[in-house]
Image (cartoon, rainbow, N blue to C red):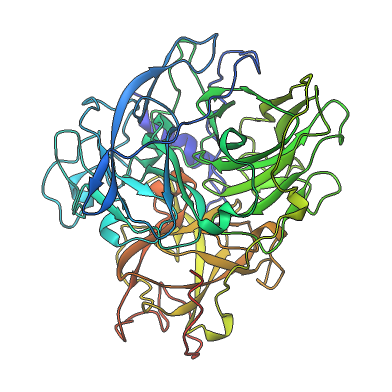
Length: 572
């Protein structure tokens, strides 16, 4: 076991100036390095679409196993022990249709009794004393799977205290192991991933995540690349021991990043494409690393553009070309942000490109310009090889610059009933760096926001810390309406559409507008850097019916009321 007194002394030295809001804990990962592995020597796997197991109460039913298994992640590494869904990391693609209900169960009974990693019992959620309504044990091995970005009832949301263990111990908010997912929302590429209180960072790093996709009839008519030319890509980072096992610190660290690219479950893979258009569904599933993605080759800027047409959900207002000379130089994705892009390789037969990353770790808004931290660098992710076939390549998809995107329904900012000012903070608690929302952790209790079902509200996120926080709200999507020091600067071109994660950089305030439908109940909002979420950076909000708003007209978790009333556009 690591010497905790030594670890605490080191933390206190690092954060000696913490009465300041600007303490940034040293990034973990640099002290342990992966073996020297050759890049781009294996093909990138592509996850398969999971077929339903049958029907249940009139809906397609999926019964998905959570398992421990070994996976060869690089030819020069021994097999790596992972946790995943049905024998693969990432898990299979769950594909739903908009407005068509499915039912989904995750069965963890096949997991072992011991966790892959050391469980640090200083983190809240790992002991019975951390729960108000739980008298039983809190096993080290337990899971709860959240379908990220879905508009669902609380009982089907996969929330942090609704966990189960392989032998049937359940958390205090557990209701059912079959989630009812109505898919009444914009089409999207999302994920399903572990959300267990106290060990979410460990379970996700072990491999508990996969793709969740909602498709729509209107999407089918756009002429997007389809079939084998529609490729989900999960971007992650890992550190490996020489025996192939995953490395993660035995004790809690406030920031962690790996030193090795892990793309669709393979270390530094390559992907072979034909000289034609491809659609890539990009998901940043890292615990804490932000990516700033570009396509490059040996000639510098002579690479095809990435044309982004979708953010986390729905569509952008306009297609955004990304690359040299485009609207953006690179595509920045914070943890659990997503983007869908089309890349046209038709003029590049026989050429090779590299997907590069220019974001430092820990991320603080800088792209390789000294504004980031001292964490492990990860500048290359995956190589793309364009074939040079003898015959003509057929491509009937729409050129990305000609895509006619459906209009996105916006929420009416003028109809907002409430403006809530939310602060992102940091402090030392019990010798641990602790991230806070409105000065509180998930376990602090007290007042919390109570928006009315169907109400339009504006939430303002003010970041008083020294690095970026991707803020995620369960249940709803939102529109970014302002950024910058005073929250009045325009959002980036590729933020102008439905989102459920927004990056808030140091010293800025980000303003979003949303509508709280269709369900009542308690949901979390949190930072999606998993180590931040784990050590406090999560708070509840409660959607109430009628006039049961309670706290929120002012107070510790609700900012200021603006006096406006009215109903917003549902945006569905």
